Image 1 (cartoon, rainbow, N blue to C red):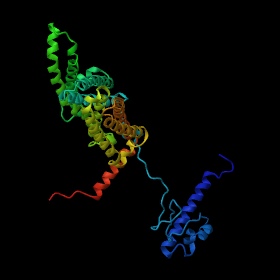
Image 2: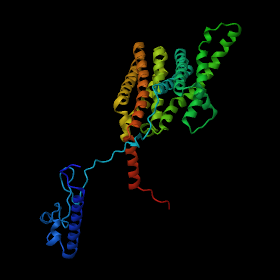
Image 3: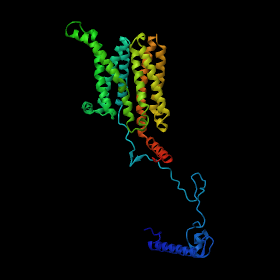
Image 4: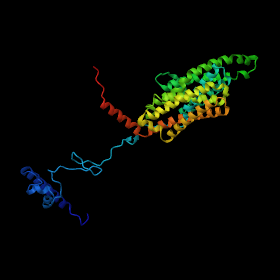
Length: 399
């Protein structure tokens, strides 16, 4: 113990004396009125009385306390306001509120290739029904290549091919993943048969292969129509799949995501037609480009304006840059497609712009959703707003 310090016993005696003085002051206050203006021990609660009684100065109890606001002003109702910043809820016991998707680039690439396969199948059907062989051939081959790449990306994300097979054990209409698995299982073989049928003219005219030469075209036509019939489901189910998650900016955009993905699929398929088909056969591709661009631009505008705070992840960072680039490329591609009716070079540039726009849109939507899951404000603030609306507008009881 330091020699300059008072012994513990002396400190305890001072503490007891102070308690006794305060008890006497309280008794005098109860017997003789105001402590601030009275005499005797009660004045110990004023600065002068406290000094006389050997107590620390304290404000008189009959004077209302005044607290200061953070900016230096005074509160009207009296009392002290603690200068504590508002609480920011960021985690549960140090863990994030939502677990952000752990998907890598395979998933947005899967979204793009799936949409490209669906759009190309529709372009091929347009060429088939309007007797445009170059457009039909380009659509069928592109559809098979895209759906094959899509299956590779999906299996890479699942980790092992058997998991895709296991999902075929059940068919559940309320599960977007189950529906998508069955759609892929129907679309893939149909697109494959339709593409193989394009090789019929290369087969010999006689023998067993000659039989294949005669049978493949009608079988390919039927398979092409089956692929086109399932293409809308293939193009949109991924949007439903994302909206069915708890990721805030995906879940809240459930009306727009299928429309955006459908428009992006049509535009990308049209891009293939503009790239591969002569300008005189690219009429259906140009019309699909206009329809797809209109649908995609409408949906992108809605997700950036309708969702309130949850629109923010789609306008900032990498997601914002990608979506702005996608819109610019979409507009440029449509303008070029319409202006390049007789210009092959301009038609090719327009097709490339539409394909690049689809890539930017799919990756932008993906990154926007991931960003909204990582920042807790996109989860907490909308929940509080919904709770406030329920409190301010309670539902009327049923009569």
